[in-house]
Image 1 (cartoon, each protein chain N blue to C red):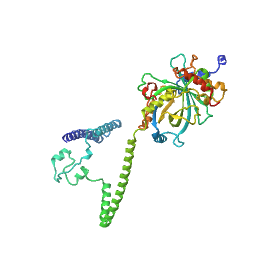
Image 2 (tube, rainbow over the protein chains, first blue to last red; image 1 turned 180 degrees about the vertical axis):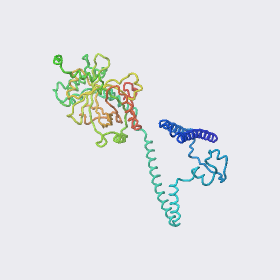
Image 3 (cartoon, rainbow over the protein chains, first blue to last red; image 1 turned 30 degrees about the vertical axis):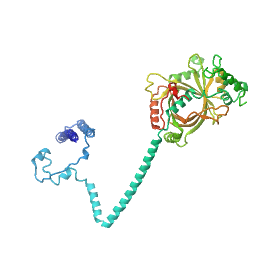
Image 4 (cartoon, rainbow over the protein chains, first blue to last red; image 1 turned 60 degrees about the vertical axis):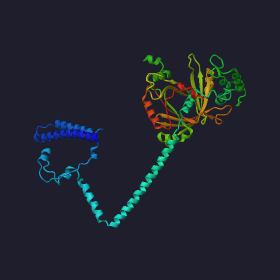
Length: 256
Length: 227
């Protein structure tokens, strides 16, 4: 708690410092407009503006800093109003506010709403006052009913949504790493595709692939021959029994 | 002047070399891979329908048969060539494709996707015979059936991979490899455009946690995964 107060104090100090800088800048600018109107150059005037905007961005940076507590959440509360002239206050405000009075405070502390807001509020209050007690009661009841209904709808769909999300989280897995690996290895290297053929070559490839061409040529693709003319079989590891199988199978090709 | 008469206009090979040199040929594939369980594929398709370009027409389906051929030259590593044909459109040309090894170079760790060279050509159905005569042999083959989406120049494939079964035509009697769909996100582009990887990464983020799209080097997969 104490730490937060310290933080608030420190940030208020820095904001105050920046505000004072801006104020003196503004005063200097007004002075220039008043007294050096004839000799004032447009570029220097623009430079002044640039300086001001730089200071504004600096102050907004201070305000939006993480360590600055949100000042807008704090309220300024006038504890004592005094219609008499106060020298200390005049000195503090540089002669602008002579007394902390009832007509000045709402403007300075922003407790008074903006004029059009005030106007609207007045209208509404007037309307509310002109309504009979029963009618008002009835309207409030209707309003409550509608609100409850909306609340019901919202909470119901929230429930549905949450249960759906829960069930989805429950089923969880939608992909499997080992399946990914086996699929990639199969497509990439034929893992699991080559080994599964007890009769390699036999019915695959040629009959289906090479439609035209004489029967003698169709057999050609079946023979897994290495460049050296040796049967390569299954990566050269094939037992010789299978080798004979190839030929036998080629002989009884289903498509012939 | 007279010299111009004598020399032929630029040959096709010359213009190809020039194109290669100026780096305008989209011969690099940027790739991310992942998978989605069969039970969740509908959710993924739904999400992709919303995210991708072909919203109104819906996803394109495909049903392809792919064969991987290899030939051993002088090098130790065999050269791999893939032949792909559409089973649902038998009249379409076949596709022959070369895919290089994933690039392992400076900064590859930092790269968000796999980058590998990739060259496609259309060809006739006799390509299988041709390759065989050349001394290639078929390593393996599979059926891939699924959906294709586009988003800008990204291509997203959601496909089921099936084993070929013996003695039966490819249309029936096929057996899925796993209980998941393979999901691939890829772009073909000229080399050196590493911004693409960032785009793809951003898109992959949008599919999480449904699918984890990652750069997977299948050469370095743990062997325990093998069936």
